[in-house]
Amino acid sequence: MHKPGQSTRRLRCAIYTRKSSEEGLDMEFNSLDAQRAACEAYIASQRSEGWVALRERYDDGGFSGGTLERPALRQLLGDIENGLIDVIVVYKIDRLSRSLMDFAKLVEVFDRNNVTFVSVTQSFNTTTSMGRLTLNILLSFAQFEREVIGERIRDKFAASRKRGMWMGGFVPMGYDARERKLVINPDEASTVRQIFERFSEVGSATVLARELRRNATRNKQGTVIDKGYLYRLLKNRVYLGEAVHKGNIYEGEHDAIIDRALWDRVHSILGESPRMRGNNSRTQSPALLKGLIFNENGAAMTPTSTKKGARRYSYYVSMDVLKNRETGDETAPRRLAAGMVEGAVVGEVRRILQTPEITRHVATALKDDSSEIDASAALRDFQTLWNNLFPTEQARIIQLLVRRVTVTASGLEVDLRRDGIAGVVREMISPKKLEAAE
Image (tube, rainbow, N blue to C red; front, side):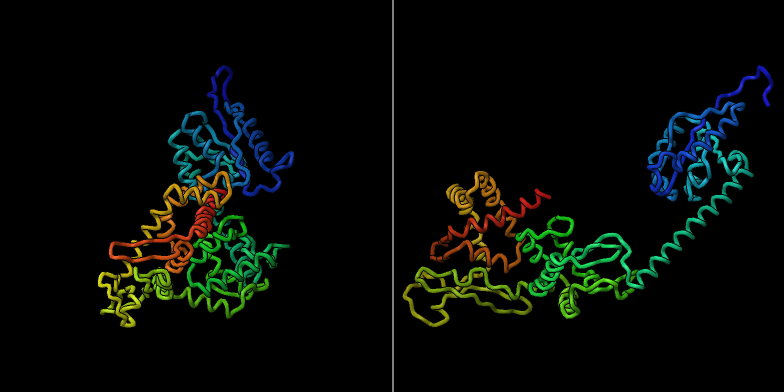
């Protein structure tokens, strides 16, 4: 007790409160208020020692004690570093932290700034060795309790998954969550089946994602389906009616959307390397100019190839040569390297598409006041689109754009299908509009 006339140092006390869940925080008098009331009463009992409660509130509602990333705690530490606090008062130690390692960091901050820590229900002084020992023992038990609770939750979760129960979280496309169970959403389930069936046909997530984008097919969140989402969907065993937990597979309570035969077809394709699937797509794709390329005598030039060692060389050969027909024109091209002539045709198509006349024609065909700007941008980006296409898609685009390619002694003549340009440009513009809407 202080003698009359003896001055007492004023100690600024900050009250920190925390509650892990948000349940009950909307009540008029909640758990945070109860903690603060107990702390204020303790501070009032120490008024003779110069203790004064600060008006600033440091309340973390809905934040776990297993981390230091809490807004009110960060503000409290900032005020400590700025020299605004002398004593920290909490209802129980675990309100400040449930982690022994985190608490050691906090005590280091307290000591560096000459701040005392007090628990209302667990009296001790952190400035003494005995106080530190008591603190470490209490924190060890708090951390042990937290770990036991975590293990209990994980065990319950694992047992529920073994029974095939859905334990919440992300709801897969094709299902809705009702009364904590997955039930089939007919419209979405139809889309999921179509995706599986189409992938089993094309064997390429890149090609399928491009088709879905053109068709404006969206996932459950309303965004355009990309290749990454496709892979996650195709590998999700929930569509087989199964539940998975830590690599173990159990029969689920929900109904399946995909049958085993379709699943096996899709995963036999996924089992191949992406490079092999790409090579298969290229091998099965038609030649870019098949049926479109002729020499100046009117003879068709057909695709052919030869193999030397491990490399394959592709050509376009005149039918006059293949059928040993005499044309009398020695200047007419007889055999052309496929890569060279195809590259030249694509370059010429790109040049023609960028002319003002074609841009105006496309804008008129699209019948949209803003289309000329969009059409011009899409036509300028033709090369970018082209580079992202698989060979089968490239061949389809060329068939839409090109009527005939004539090879002469002096070069190439490319005749475009004007009625097909607008359709191709519409496909080029649509993905950008979809991306802008996301």
